[in-house]
Image (cartoon, rainbow, N blue to C red; front, top):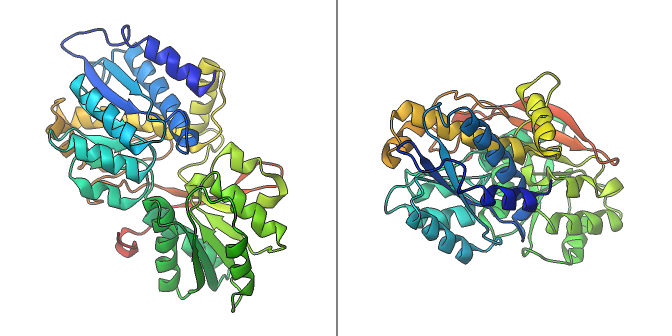
Length: 383
């Protein structure tokens, strides 16, 4: 079943799932089904709705609150996202799940701020997104966590100089490399050079030429570029004969990137989890495939399910569905139970402290586990 068919199937059931009752809980979902966010929103929404359906089959959240989801396509457009969020609030949404990026989440949170409606991003990782207000939450390990873990790994591999490739067009594509650079320097490394690019930039030849001419030559190149920019960049880099190791953020955890072949062989990226044999994550994959016919091939599926778990645990802790009470309770969760990993919101400015996985892509399209650890909150680069 495709993401779009799953969306249409779920939307067609909205009049059935959680039919009006005193215990109904309404969740509005922004899910880009086209554009740059579709590779992330699609899987995240699929995992979220799958687990909501499971909970509804067992009496709803905590066995007491049936969930009705209002799902709207943003087309990866911030203005459209603002419009659909207002529509969902008008339809009674008590919680908003926003797209998998900081910028649309920030825009949505400015709309939900007036009524304090809890707003959680599918996978936006820029820690600045929670600064809009106390009702805003991340769900995935933040960029400063990922950058700190990746920088420590690079230094452990003996890498002394890094070249940063970043885009100021997005909080994610700008912040990730900068957090890496800050952590890398704190560990004794140095920044050999930096280049900026524009989102959807088709030609990276000038940046590649600059990297080739940099002295001292970088030991590693780090970027938080996503599709289609990362494929264009890595092809230009390897096509120019530059074999310098490349590292990036969780956004590289997609089948499209893994399917690029030899040009991505050895690329290292951060991630939110890994389905170890016998783990709850591995069981999620088996169960999801059996139920939908789709094999989850990235972490956004299971993180979508964990968002459902986060909401359920916050409502249980609050003892209420009042938006302010749910937001306050979620902010105090410590070592909450998740499938991808456990999560802590307490004392984190509502960007959850979670395990960060470092993974390696092979030329045959596989993802290999490298390490799993948590960033040290005391030494995290600050937004």
